[in-house]
Image 1 (cartoon, rainbow, N blue to C red):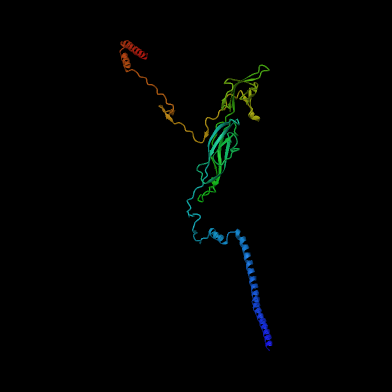
Image 2: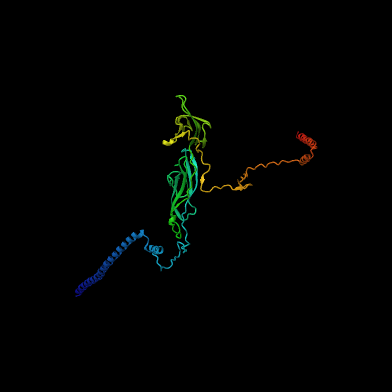
Length: 412
């Protein structure tokens, strides 16, 4: 009995341990099962959150090249006020980038374009081109205001020729000096200016528009000028006939020309000149190309010119006076010449004003002759008393001799 109880007790212990192990296993398995379901749900949520964060990070990385949204908005709100309206309040900032002032519009100003002016025409020679030319100086009006000169034209007319025409090669938009080489010797010329202008785009708003009648202006003409000088002059006095067949015809006269090296008029053979056909003067520039006794004509050729202008004929009948070769004594100006005032003479006729002597060269004052009062008194008394004249003259002679002798002694 005791053995049975001991065996049963052992079996009960085993069953108890088995039941306890099953209960413990169940207790352990139940949390594990429920914890796995929860963890799977939490893991899925964490993965979605992580993916969204990564996507957002990528977008942030793409947006790093542009300024932050908040800063760009602040800049736009500060510097782009938008379209202005009548009900907008006054724009005020803490730190004003630009000082703004409300100014009243000033009085209206006049836009003017007045005619220009030709100042001077002078005659000159160019040593390199070996030619004479006219130098023309002109200027725009100093009273022009708020205008922009668009074009300036210089027009010229030859005396006895066609009407005014623009000068070739001239170009200017203001004051100028122009050398006109397209002139002919012996001719006189007249010039004037034409100018066109418009209102200056940079002029203030209060400047009026340019009147239509002032858009184009024309100056007063200047001229006619003195005759343009020649390169040479020939005055014929005689043409000698040929005595022998081998002789060349001769001409007598006076030939002068302008020497560009020396800058003056040169007379190669003096006042009495004899020229034979084919003679050359002026360093070979001028040649007596033909001398004809039958036609009483001398043809001079200028090798600096080309074509028909290179030869010129002088007849014994016409070539009696010299033509101008020297330059003008003074230029032609627009200012009137100041003439000396005339002083009325004793008879009422006008006499030219006296010239004022130069201060630098003092004039010598004429020496006053001194006369001896005693001698004059003696002469007057001698004239009254005729008998005593000889004695008084002798006395005077002796006194003069005495004074001269004393002076000579003193000098010695």
